Image (cartoon, rainbow, N blue to C red; front, side, top):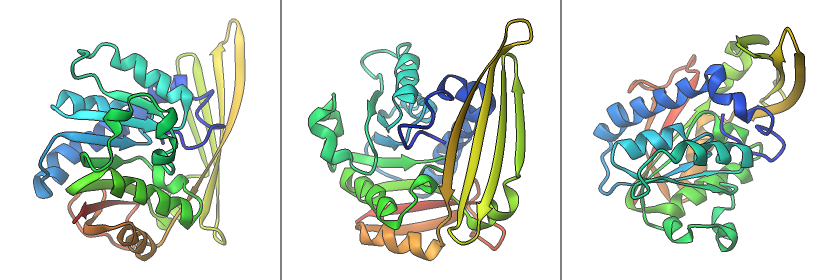
Amino acid sequence: MPGKTSDIYHAYAPFYDGSGQIRFAVLCASYLLGDILPRHPVTGRRALDLACGTGTLALILTDAGWFVVGVDRSPAMIAIARSRAQSVDPAIRPHFIEADMRWLWRETTRIEHVEALRRGSFSLVTCTYDSLNYMLTEEDLAACFSTAAEALAPEGLFVADMNTRHFLEHDWGDVEIIERPGFIQVNLSRFDPETACSTMRLIGFVGDDASGYERFEEIHVERAYPPETVASLIAAAGLSVEAVYDCFTTQPIGAYTQRIAWVARKR
């Protein structure tokens, strides 16, 4: 779940990949390159990854021959992404930019690599791993879709995923414990049916039994949206929904779908 606000993913960022989160980005890359793009082809090889987190998807796309710009609001996540990119040939190295994906074009005056962020120059925009669920109002969600639409070249493709209400309400467990050498993570979650929001209290312990542990805590809130609302907001941004998949498949969504993959094109 790539960073969306300045007060989350600060303390957790160094442990994000090691806690297993990196696997989702690898799965997204395989799904995108193996299933989505063959069915929904694009011309060109410029990609913008919104809420890029520690940069795994961006780096995989780079390795597949894409020029990639990654954007995330979390300074800690962007710092890790930039560090990981240092091993890539400078000629093809992805750009990682600290910025809010809702207001990307408002912030270009203070952003490095403005030329890499030319509006209307990207053939692909991605936004994965619950990132859009962190948008807690329809206005914020619409702003993200507008960013994607402005970034895309004509016939460019927007690919994003979102958790469903069914997943947040019924399938996301109340308690999860993750243990790694030197790190313990406890997730405590609750769903509010009135707001369709799931609030996760993430408690981390860093250290060892000999020297002791340091504790940190973050609060993560995700909102579920009806598919009809999402489709309407995507259309209002100037994008045409091309497919709605039960994520990681090419099957239609159903009552028990946990995650939806949205595929939309700029006409």
